[in-house]
Amino acid sequence: MKPSTKAMPLRVCARLTLAALATSTFSVTALAEQESLDAMTITANRMPTENALAPNTVITRADIDRLQINDLPTLLSRYPGIDMTNSGGLGKASSIYLRGTNSGHVLVLVDGVKWHSATAGTPSFQDFPVNQIERIEIVRGSRSGLYGAEAIGGVIQIFTRQGKNQSPTPYASVGIGSHNTKQASGGVSGGNETTRYHANFTHQSTNGINAREEDNPDHDGYRNNSFSARVDHQLTEGWSIGANFLRAQSRNHYDSFSLTEDYYANNVQQVLGVNTQYQVTDFWLMSLNLSESRDENDNYVNGMPDPQGKTYNTRHRFISLVNTFMLSKYQRLNVGFDYDHDRVESTIDFDESSRDNKALFVSWQGEADRHSWLLSARHDDNEAYGEKTTGTAEWGYQLTQGLQVVANAGTAFKAPTFNQLYYPDVGYFVGNPDLEAEKSKNYGIGLLGNANWGNWGVHAYQNKIRDLLVYQFPTTENVAEAKIKGIEFDLGTTLLNWQIQFNATVLQPEDEETGNKLPRRAQRLANLHVDRQFGDWSIGGSWKVSDYRYDDAANNTRLGGYGLVDLRVAYQIDNDWSVKLNAMNVFDKEYQTVNNFNTLDRTYMLTLHYQP
Image 1 (cartoon, helix red, strand yellow):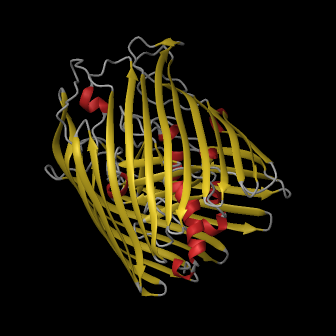
Image 2 (cartoon, rainbow, N blue to C red):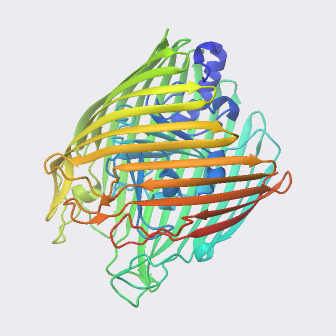
Image 3 (tube, one colour):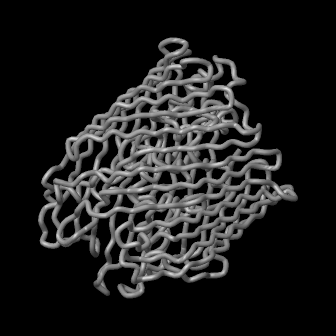
């Protein structure tokens, strides 16, 4: 069982709070000593905790290296409660469905910075470089009471790589695989007791596959060049400052109705943040964050700007001031203010091109005897769709040393996008400025076990969403309601020296009025990962199973279920060099997650790593 924070001296809790809050509010300035914080989760409570009551999953850099998965949507889909659709292979449009909610119902943070497109309402998961990731925290369930809009299904926070207390250390990797896929990555990490830094450049490219059967029968390639950097500095014992930057530039070729012309889009994903934390007193920590994220999209045909295409460049700026109070050795209080500003620059003349959101929130995390809890409340005031008040209540009870029961309830909302609110009248579509935010109520209960042989958890939940936004020619209306019921199971153990991870999800995502299943969401999902070390060798395999799904809201187009088998092997040549080989979809299963869009066949990747 994980050690309780009750056993930690107050000065240690304060040190961990300082380091971890640099992550949560919101920029990862050193996760302090990594081995000390591996048990901590930041995103679930928007403050550090070793006993997060919300269902959550942590994906570490070691997990990513072991699974040898090189694109973010596929990686996320291997974990509990997450379904994924893909429209044509590596780098093509991909959507994430968390606990059966819509693709826009998950809040995504990168080093604490909100990452999304203000026009589309979702981030471009397929463009985020996996080589830049240090850690991912996934929180399932309503989180608007802490974070505001979008967090109906949950929150996914990506932490980029950070420096370590060591002399400058370079590292690099090169890889080649199916469909002329190439990868190269290099970086340097270092620091001392007061300053840490990290920088990385990554290239990924592929000839791709034919994205659609019915359109231009060619290979639709993809290329992505990314750079990330961060520096963190301890000015004094109680005052730190940090900065982080990530930029990914991609080119994605896609099919159109023309059989002869070459269509592609240039995309940019950029995140920039500056943060500072100041320990005002022994029990009061103040954190300030200034950040910006950008999503840019430009379309071309035969190398020239597409006359029928559109340019969408969105910018999100964020200011957060959070005060964390150590009320006692076992209780913490967060009181904060968030300010968000969205702006759109486009070849489309939107009726409005910017909007502001101001929010106040408070949360209380504590432990007493066998009880633990989290209570939060938040009030958002948005100039586009009005005011919203949301909250979260969670409680846990330690039945035995290794068994805990948890219960949670929360409200959440999803803001309408600029497209839905302000798109000009083009005949077949026009924005509706009278739209309200989508709203939800979520309830859940769970049982968590922790023993010498491993850990497990089972969670049941219900999420009822009203005022769902639905396109009704020629505009969008708040007309639908949905009810999603589900149960999740997660297990991690070691058996005969094999490391085993298993998760399964069963859910009912239904339209309340029609009784139809919500589109593009499978009702049953399962993943099994097994790995073992043999001296300098390691081998492993994964099995992913997905039930059938419907491609449309009327449930007329059914896409069959599928099972995928992945195999992997790695060899440590010496202390610095290693080589890895993986094969995905070993049995060459043909399947679709979006009607008429192909998915990858059997693929392989051979990679050489240098890591002193």
